[in-house]
Length: 438
Ligand code: B12
Ligand code: SF4
Ligand code: SF4
Image 1 (tube, rainbow, N blue to C red):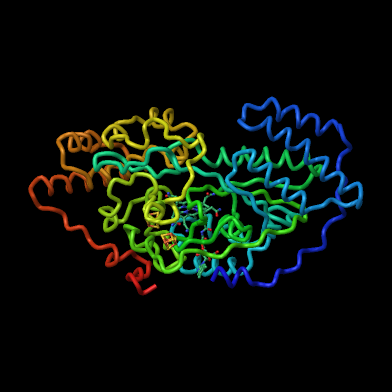
Image 2 (cartoon, rainbow, N blue to C red):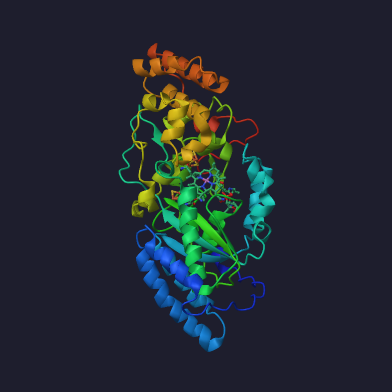
């Protein structure tokens, strides 16, 4: 499939706008940028400053000779500037999602988005970049590594928080970094029309990263590269007529480890997720009750899930993540009962600047209650659940009651029957494909 994309004849870009003049050497705007950059705390900013000074003159030389900007040289300068800013890779795609838009609509029509209404509401904006940001010609796509150090599997009485959420909120970090890249581009090429995103607007991020040659789509649907998938995506929609990079061939081959590893059977076929079954959806996006049949399969995962990436052979080659994403508050090894004891105020204060804060204290308690119900039937777990039995939220009370019942059943020696993921009925959801059917 990826090869078919790669072999598609390139669709013509709309006629490029008139070449934009580069500001004169020593222009105030550039000097202001250079000063701001050189004084920035960001590691590597001085190097980037030097780099910009060197390359600006290269690009300008071409501009002087031909009276046009050499967009190929500009693209390479943008790539290098992005790497100076700590991005793992930078690529360029045309702002045309192509057949991916039809597949998005099919996915929505099947209801796979569950209660993520924003996915349906903004489908047209997602499929048409020019509607989201008028004048957009190209997408400058970027990846930022996030794999935190350590990585020992949490014990059953510990919380499993997905790796992407153990440190600082990536939405802010990636967008902040992209804004610096946009400033660097303006310093090289003059003012241009742009908008930066990192999972912050209806943008087909994986598709553009794939088209930009930053990786291929793994069968788990995420962007995958030879350096694995522990990477955030972000992009700059731009009006610069940069030449697009070529997509790369896919390298999943006969592997289907992620389909087998998914605890809830959410990867219903290669490249297709039914979000309603995905633990990431159930613990983060879903506001209400977690379907009872799926609760035992969550284990100790209280925020997101990493299983389809942990099993992926390409992640053996993953690079360490950016320092911003190093675990805070011991979120890589915290005890469930300790996190369950956090008050609403402690939750808000300790998770300031962390993506988990977005789900709120109520969902946090809901998720931990389920994890406690799936964990060892210790006196401490039972006491922690009892202390929340009369919580003002009906949602919390219901999940606490379920968890207490499970622990009580286990204490009496009635091991709960854990249903097999493939046989679980979810209202409105087609039965997931059995292994090998996909
Ligand atoms: C909605 C969403 C979710 C939903 C739905 C996931 C999904 N795969 O669609 C839920 C809540 C489940 C989720 C979970 C996670 N997410 Co999420 N999510 C998004 C979001 C906001 C939109 C994705 C989307 O458009 N889905 C809609 C469907 C239609 O898109 P799709 O799966 O890409 O579908 C395409 C393919 O299936 C393809 N297709 C269909 N059939 C076929 C057949 C063949 C042969 C081929 C080749 C392709 C193909 O066509 C479809 C259209 O292009 C993006 C950010 C963004 N703005 O893009 C982040 C994003 C995809 N998520 C991200 C992450 C990190 C995660 C989690 C790992 C978090 C976690 N640890 O818990 C999990 C991983 C689960 C998984 N395996 O996907 C990252 C992924 C980074 C990367 N390396 O790719 C993103 C890009 C955010 C970011 N900026 O970094 N997520
Ligand atoms: S994140 Fe977990 S539940 Fe979701 S598809 Fe991947 S393995 Fe399955
Ligand atoms: S686990 Fe295998 S099939 Fe799944 S994304 Fe990784 S390489 Fe591809």
